[in-house]
Length: 180
Image 1 (cartoon, rainbow, N blue to C red):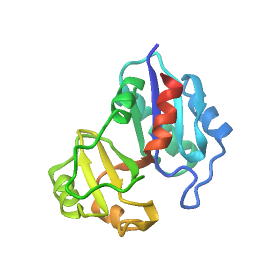
Image 2: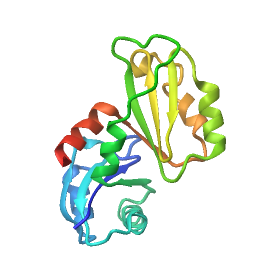
Image 3: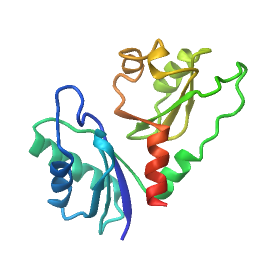
Image 4: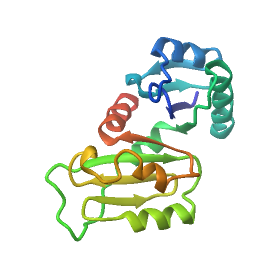
């Protein structure tokens, strides 16, 4: 039975509060199995009888919108796809990296459009550097997230019109280790 990780946008942010037991119950209502959550930020691990990730994603989004009363963008990855994400190593950059750069992954619903690639290339700086893969963007920050001038609204403006959700690489590594 295929295993998936759902990364949900808008869970427990912006005034939307969903307890993890409620979120697990919503997934089980869809007859998904082995449902568990990982931290209270919208990471749900589950098994399904289907290998149609796009169909599952649409089903989950529709159910969550119906039950919660607002759209919850959903991004599914298999454990092997997540393993590829966490295996990412940035190529050398001209500016020496900070001793401990912050690393975030921006999940995309589909392939990165040219407009997003152009905008992120424009935003590359000594502080922020973006590596665009097919359905993810790796964002390395030379310092803490709050040090970046893109913190708060800057990144939202850059990704406007593109469905995204963002996770810290440390969280993704912990999920991948759990699924490995």
